[in-house]
Amino acid sequence: MPSIDAIPVTSTHLAFDDTDSPDGMCTTYLAALVIDALRGWDLIGLPRLVRLNPNVPWKTRGNAAVSLSVGVGSGPRRLCGEVDGCAIEAYERGAPAEPREVLDVAARVLEANAEFSCENTNPGIVCCNRRPPQRLYWSAVRDVVALSDVEGILEKNDAVWKKYKNGRGVIGASAAMSWRPRDRTWEVISYRDAGRIGTQRDIDSASVLRMDKETLHTFNNYDYETRHVAIAPASPCPVLFGIRGDSADELVRARDMIRGEEPASWILFMTNQGTDDHIVHRRVGDLRANLSAKMAVEVVGEPRTIEGGHVVVRVSDGREIDAMFYEPSGSLTRAARALVPRDRIVVFGSYRETPRAVNVEKMRVVGMQRVIGKSRNPVCPDCGKSMGSLGCGQGYRCKRCGRRASEAEAETSEVPRAIRGGWHEPPVASRRHLYKPVRRMPNGNINKLLIRN
Image (cartoon, rainbow, N blue to C red; front, side):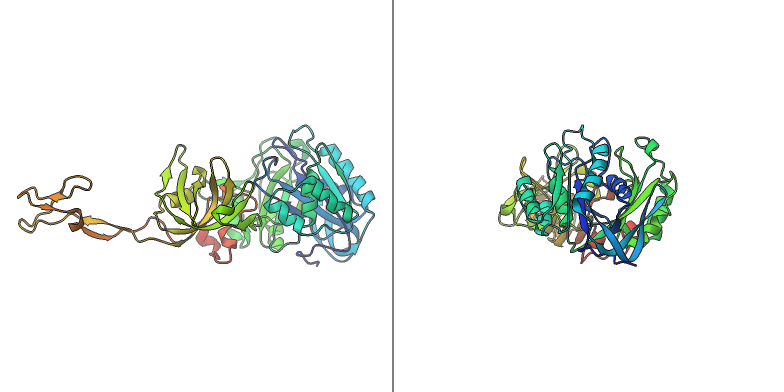
């Protein structure tokens, strides 16, 4: 069986991007159609689903591109999908094809299916025998890349490509092709019959819950906080459901556990989802537009709840900025509301220029300030009775004899905090595609059942 980690070198690489819209289509579905059309060649290695910078303002939905490798396969092979009743197998290695021929076949499929009517849909398709340098991927997942720069790289790599409308999809396609994973996950995606696309999906939520509880390496299947089935998209796209996880073999088994509408096809992808590849360690003074960052900061102001139930926390690492926790983030927002000045936290999120803030995706509490509060009013030494308060900051007075006491004479004790140290994350339904769940963090290895309960 071929390695599920490998990205083939001796093959022809094909990638495409920006073919969907908020109203339909899906670039991964186009991958299924392209694989079916390329049956004159073999699939080498797993298809790769690559998410790019989630902060770019012109993205259509999830900012995903797809990369495939094809050629004349050799060596071990493994089942990685089914299209129109025909099994899709991926070889471990292979000899390259002619890039222009592969491009022409794939381009015809793209031209017949992409959502060209959407203003923000600007497809691009790229093919070559030598992948672009991996720095292109890191630039595209963390920053904004110019099309002219990408085309210069493609020319040096003897690539062929087609761009449609403004051609921005060439950027994402080239970046997906250049991805060499430091971390990776997998997703198995099942697609709907063409006649049912746009209608309500029929997915048995009880089967999703059973699958979630009976698999060890899947994640983001079900939102226990909002009771939402998270494997099904909300858009009217061709995807029936997608299951993500850290074991490709387990994902194929998990797919068979879902009951309801019968899928028409399915594909197993290697992906960068759930990796936090978009996150860069930054200081407050280094933040800029379209950037996602993690920052070690100290709370310097009391949390404020604003209209809509969102929470604003002023933080600083020498320079101050607002950390925004949005109401849909549920338990994460409640944790933010329990912070106090001098707490030390690490926040992960995206920078917003107007109003200037960091939109927090997850948080780790690394240092908690002791909170001391009044436990009892002073006792009158003459009467032995508890004194009454004269108002905030005005001290106390005995109701029987009139003796006074200062604020400092009240008894105090440490107040239990309504927040715990460690990781705090939003419910599944509020997580971005690249968001790394706490259970995947190096110091967040918590039992799956413990997280769910």
